Image 1: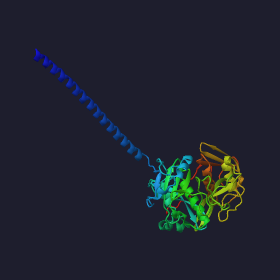
Image 2: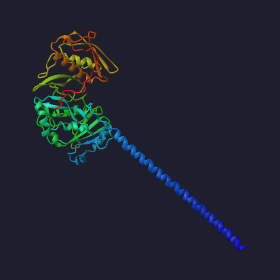
Image 3: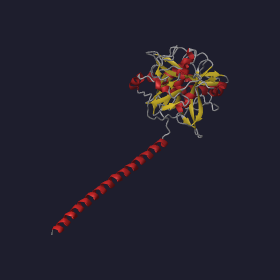
Image 4: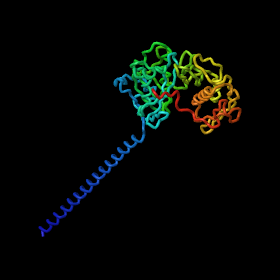
Length: 397
């Protein structure tokens, strides 16, 4: 009997061991299975991440010139980080933005707009083709550097790269602000007009992109209050506060209490005629009727020196309206006070390019004294005309 009791006790112990062992095996299987499942999830997430990168053709926000000294950013003033909190700018780390060129042709090349200087110190926008690429904002700035290759491409057109030879830079784009950090070579110029044009060219070239509203300029990682001829670059610069080709002002900085707009005029350079923006600075500009102000200044007597306009003097806007992107301009009969088909085309171009700064507009319809009419030389303006994408296009550049 005693042997039988010992046997029963042994069986009970074996059962307990088996139960514990079975439980351990089940738990181990569950844990291992969850780990495998998690690995699958991670793999799926990695694949999705890669797909997302491929799906979006983005410019990284930190666009760095590969020729720039990698140690440049180590000198960044920590006070900039405090400014960033107020201005929404982070020059050390940013998220990805899509910086798209304005237009793309069927070959995969893209069009960019860059601002060169002519021999008389005017900035002239030119549309040129470059290969489709990430970092198109950086590619645009590189076109402005006075390298031998860039000079050879532009000087036959009477145009010259504005950034001094040896200029290097990096760009970080975040929350609509492009922070561009130059090396000291950018300061190698010797007159005030060049200084002003460097700033205006960089600002206008970068703000062609929809993801860039304004620009912050640094030198060797530090904020500069002003450049050596007094140009203030301490704040964020944009087309709203930077003057371009403005000969009446001693600065490119918009004066306190003043307002500005850009009108487009013509200039002959060598054997070509270019359209270029000219900033008007006036405290009386009606910002609620920019289209009316543009027509007013386009129709003023010619006092722009070497620049000229095809707009008849005294042209007046009777009225205007904006509806779903369509800007309707009702002009008076002075629109007919000219002769020649080239003047007619030039006049329309001046108005269209000038109207690009009117918000929420992509097309323009012309009326004359409230009616749809043809112009003197037969140009049909009965249908809305899309705002142009490219300006002064030179395909050979």
